[in-house]
Image (cartoon, rainbow, N blue to C red):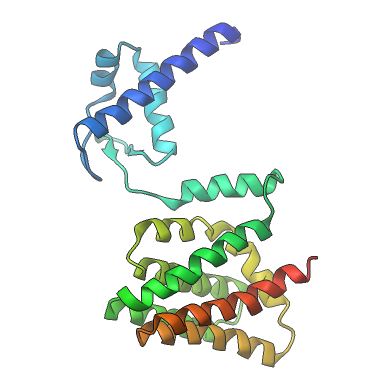
Length: 235
């Protein structure tokens, strides 16, 4: 399909088809996991071909609006921060934003999630946060450190009780795979390693003790020391 006009027309049809699916979900009050009509049914209703409707389904699946699996009907998908993460990574790789910009946003968000987590966390969530901080102290390589540190911050965001905070923090996961090893590489002495671990544990303990002000202050100290130094070295 090399004709620009034909491509434009098909693109318009796909856009209309995706909009129709979104409208159907909204108008029928569908929730996560609810089944959608088949591609064929939508194609007839919208007045487009099956190939156009298939492209629309694929586009919505890529955006995590619907979940399309082999051999079963499409379903309404759950919110997924990975979509936002891909967009942020693209923005960084194309120099639309700097990594330091992302961490500035992250810092603002995570001060609030720590505070909220201290107020709202369950006992199980408090245990998970403490366990993640402890696991970080036992980690001896970049892979395990990154996994423990990522779980630590995501567990705090989840304990905030705000699903959007959690998904936004999840969207930073790809960048943390680069930033965490880089930050640890800058910790040259045992004293610097110990301080980083102490800062993580201070956040975890404040949340477990349900002290929101202390949790916020501890997270601020963590970012100021552990993350602030990461970018000051790059300046």
